[in-house]
Image (tube, rainbow, N blue to C red):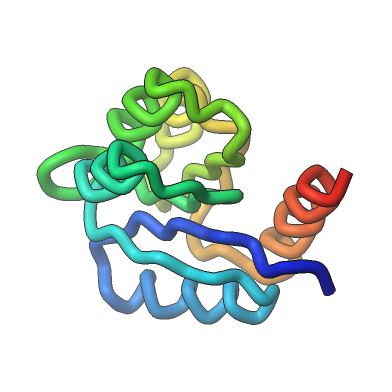
Length: 125
């Protein structure tokens, strides 16, 4: 497999963070964690580059959709951003903020797999 993908996981709930990190690592992703949207935005401001971002909706300090708007405004258009939430209206919030995709919680490997494959294929072409 080619070089591993750099994944940013933005999640404030430790158990969810652990589960999603495990899933990302199954696909050989190098995982960086952020506990809220502000931490995620700060990582982009510091010049960090990611191939994929999985982002929860409701978090302290800055929500997922707010972070997506700020990250896209910085010109980060080539990173795949996926909203992940159990909230009923989360999909609309993420998509209107500029996310590429949305997955309801709980995330399943068979849903995450094709997303990772797509990013790998795009990166290798």
